[in-house]
Image 1 (cartoon, rainbow, N blue to C red):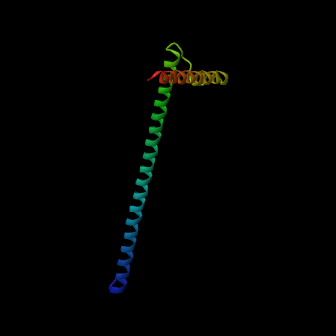
Image 2: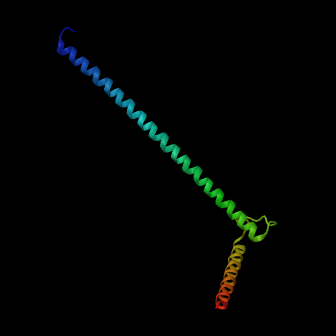
Image 3: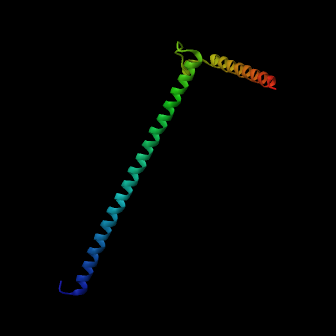
Length: 110
């Protein structure tokens, strides 16, 4: 390899290969980190959603126990469609009663 142009060619070729390997490694690492970040965010979102649903279920259970008393152990899944309609009718009746009481109270104010 006494000829400088031939030597320069091989140096350039080795430099290009080394740069390509570095670029490939950097791109692979970047995509790997992006994939890990995406997976972590999806897991955090899933955990957050689970916590929200759990809180909603607890609040619903507490509301049902408060409404029906502590002796009742029925859950929303235990209520049949007919029972659900009866519950809706009861709630409508209670709302109507509260409205009439509120209207009577407001009319009694000076």
